[in-house]
Length: 319
Image (cartoon, rainbow, N blue to C red; front, side, top):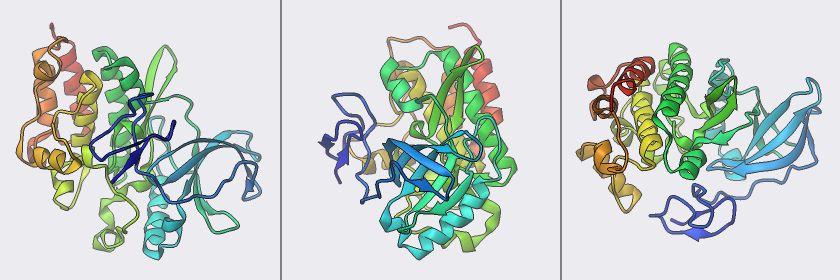
């Protein structure tokens, strides 16, 4: 399976994760999506320019002519739009995403279709830097900044969990970092792929080929096994994200995605001091991260906020 840099277009093999030219996280090329620049969707959203692309399609910047606000529009690939089961699932989960009004969540405003049948999702535009790009640019995120970002992500996740919604695909590509009010702040994106765990087995059956529910590098062990998920799966992913922020690396090694998945099912995370011997962290930070990434959900922090509080307390100890 080839991967491609969304910025320069260079292609790589399955084992690569970042572009060697510009450091951008690689994506799996998506099927064709329509070109929307210059169009007005729903007599309301004026599409201005393309922002980027991801596993599900293209993302555009648009102006809401009704409110004057700037929004982001994600247009899904045509293959997804032609899949009836995928669309049933997307409509249901978009409805869940619309319930999540929180400062640390980029919620869904509406779900629509273009005149030629392409499906799009309208979201608030978050002006900032994608966490994966910030981490790669800096090499690693300083501990005090990582604490603030984890606290923000945990607050957003907790708001979703309190509404019975599990994100399922938390990763650095799905977190925007914006600067303001004297510091950095994290906003969790793509809650449209989340799952209301109270919806029962019917929704589970709608998991369609074409919508990837989770990114292999950040899936919890129970997600890799195809088990029922709850908020503790997001806690595991948040622990992985925190580890990568601090080290610029993942805590498990493998030359392929399959090897990485097997490592998470059988191995313990690489300690911080082994991953980055050039950096010093309080000993308790490693203990907290290790607990967040336990293979068994019952052994982890049971809420995202519990993890964030323990992480902040550990970071305040002497190095």
